[in-house]
Image 1 (cartoon, helix red, strand yellow):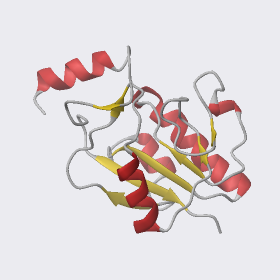
Image 2 (cartoon, helix red, strand yellow):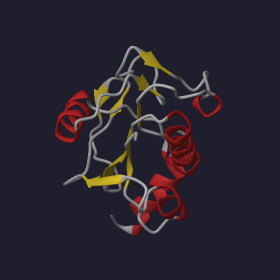
Image 3 (cartoon, one colour):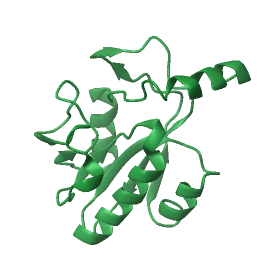
Image 4 (cartoon, helix red, strand yellow):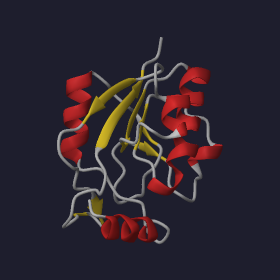
Length: 151
C-alpha cells in the first residue's frame, strides 16, 4: 500500500471502521480450525453471524462473554477488543475466534497473541462487507485468524 492510501485509510477509520465478515470466510475458518462460536461480539443486526450478538449499543466491552465467540473488531479499537477477548477467554474458559489485521509489531499483539493463541495468516487481502455488500476494495492490511482455545 502506498503512503498516501495508508494515510487516507487511517483518516477514514475515525469516521467508519466497522465492516462485516463475509460468511464464506468465516465458515471456512470454522471448518479449517474446528471452531464453533455461538456469540458474535462485534455485530449489527444486518451482519450478525450467530443467534447471539452484541452491537455497538450493547457495548461488548462491558458484557461477559460466557459463550465461545467470534470477533471482527473495529480497526480503531483492536487493542481494547483483543485485551478483552483474551481476558474473557481466560475468565470463562471459552474459545474465541478473532479476525483482525496482522500487525505483529504492535503492543497488543505481543501482550495478547504471541505465545497465547493460535495464529493463522490469511493469504491475500479480505474484502469485507459494508451495508450488506462486498466492498469494492480489499482491506488495506493483511488479515489473520487468532484463536484462543479453551482448556
